[in-house]
Structures are given as C-alpha cells and as structure tokens.
Image: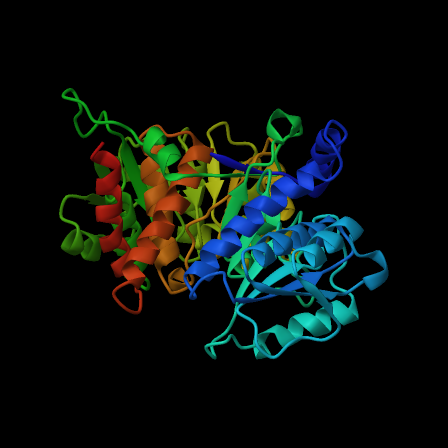
Length: 485
C-alpha cells in the first residue's frame, strides 16, 4: 500500500530534514533523481548529447530543482535553456550551476525543444497559475522537437497549476508525460483530474523516511494488497463456506442489470449466488448455477446483499430495499437503491443498521444524495458522505475514491475511461457483494472491487470498444491471476 501526503505535512518533513543538512543538499538529491529520469527519456529520443532541453523556472524550490538538473544534463552535452518566469526571484545557486555547465538563460520560448522540464511552481502554490505562467503553459503544445514531434514534458514534483491536496485543476495546468516527485506521493498525483495530467509518476527517495509523521491524506492500493486480501481456497472449502451472496437487482423492465450484477458476483470469490427479483428467467438463462426467487424475503440465507441496479423506484422496489436494509448482513447499495435513499425513511434505516453498508454512487447520484456535487475536493466530499451515512462510500470515477466513516480514504489507480459505459457499475456492485459475502472487510472489499474492475476495464479495452459483458468476461482472467498464487 502506497500513501500520499498533504503539502503542509510534506513541507514540515522537508524543513526538518533541510535543517540537518548542508545548504541545498536536499535540492541536489531531488535534482539528481530528476536529471536521471530526464536522461533516460532523452536516451529514447536519440541521446542526451545535443538534445535541446527547456527549463521552465519559477521562484520556488522546484525552479532550483530544475536548474540543478539542467546543469547535470548540460554537463553531459545537452543544450539547456532556462526560461525564468520570475527572474528577480530565481534560485541563484542553481542558476550559477547551470551557467557553469554551459546552460543559458532565455527570455522567450524557443521553436524547437526535445524535452521540457516544468519547474514553474511546487507543492506550496495555491490558487492556480499567474497569467504569465498560464500563457507559457498554453503555448507548450505548439512546441516541436528536433524531429518534428511533440517534446516530452517532465513535471517537477507535481504538474504546475494543479491543486496539490485535492487533485483539482482550477485553471491552466501543465500536462506532463512524466512527473518526478520527491519523498512521497501527493494527492494530486493519484486522484482527481490532476492525476491524469501527471502522466507516469516516478517517486525519488530523498530521505524523508519516518519524518512523515502525519496521517496520510490517501492510501493507494497495489496488486500485492489485493492478493493478500483475497480469500484463499483450501481442501475443506465448499460452496457455503466460501460465502453466499444475494443479488436483488433488475426487473422485468431492466433484466440486463440483473444479468450483469450476477455476472460480477460470479466472478468474485463466493461459492453461490442467490438472485431475488423480476428478471429470474433471464438470469437463469445466462447463469444456470444461480438459485433464483422473486423476492428478497424468499431468497434464503446469504452473507451479503447487493441491491439496486435496475430495480426501479416504485413501492415493490422500496419493499425490497427495506428487506435488504433489515437483513443483519453487509449490503451494497447501488443505482436505484441510492435514488430511494433520498427518501428520509430509507436513509434513517441505513444510518441505524448494525451491519456494514457500502454505497456506490457516481457523481450525479452523489449530488442527489448530498444536495450538491462533490466539487473540487472529491476525497473530502466522499469522507463527509461516509461519516453522515455511517457507510463505506465508493465514489465512482476515473480515479474512484473509497472513503470510510472513520476517516480513511483510498484512491484507485487502475481506473479507465473505457468503463464509462452502461452496465459496468452493475458488474462492480456484484463483484463487491461477492467479496463481502466471502468475509472481506467492507473497506477492503470496496478497494479490491474497484481495483479489479479497473483492471478488467483496461483488459477489455485492449480488444476494442468496451461493453459491460466484456468487463464480466475480462474479470475472470484477472481473478484467475489472484488465485494462482
């Protein structure tokens, strides 16, 4: 599990370390890692020697990092130019190092550049870019390399212009191919629209170590975490000990929602799926291993419920939701179940449940639940909803956020725009319910389901436009990798 820290906590850790080191030692460490990655990128474009490198240099420490890295590249034969956006506040020692190595200061963007280093602003910046910096950023797309293609853009620590602690992009911002970040991840690199602008993230160890004593803003799961949480099979396993998941989704009007959510559940670790709803015939046709009934009350014993997708919002659907909320087992509430939660009576039943609940809104559903959209701070918004509902919140999006009632938050790193198509959320809900029924703790189940769902979306996208059934099919080999350990 990786972690991302807020800007104030990172700066406090850096200040403590800087006080114990000779002048510019920490900056030179960062610059060494930055120069190394730039050199590797230039090697793929014909080599460092003779390459045209542009440094965009602001007034902060990121500008100093860029200047020292530029000096290293100039020493290896690159033609390095620095455009100072605050000439009167440029890092003096870094500029001297660059000039000594053969680099030069310029006053306008050149026409030809092979690599751009974005050192305009760092993690201490707030409120978006100043007009002169925004103008420079807007012109980056017009630059061409010596071979006529677009230059590689490398951001220092974070892309300039993003909101570091929330991942918002309040205005003009750099779109990087690679971000070289120092000491630890920052929220803008893993969540929100800023994460897309970071490109590939390269984390350089500069010695912060245990100086990061604050609670991380976000946790970011990795494959090994999902493997460790996945229920293991043994010789004594059978369908009931593996867990039974109940699926109360779909209707005569929307049978596909039932088929897809059951498909997601079958891809998970449970041994049996019980379906309750008005699409039993279609579910059994597609999934003959399922036990189907017409109502939640008739389904029999389960270890978790999935409720909502395609259920409708009439009185019959409301009665099914009430039955699920009354059950003493974990529940996943999705789609129509969330719409019905806007009714205060259902919301009261939810907050009063003893059993765990996971809700899975997309942005429009979130807005209906809260009366306002998530805004610029999706993590903060998800945490507030989790505390109010006393439920784990899985806020769907390109970088899905999982938030817990007691204040933990996770950013999913595997999201794909390919999943922005009808029915994929039904698949996610079914998979999540299967994990809960198998005994995985709610927040881990939500994190794992989002992670695997994202991988399945990426895999399906390799073969062309994605549909929800493609995601079900792609889940099977993804899960097979988990179980083959």
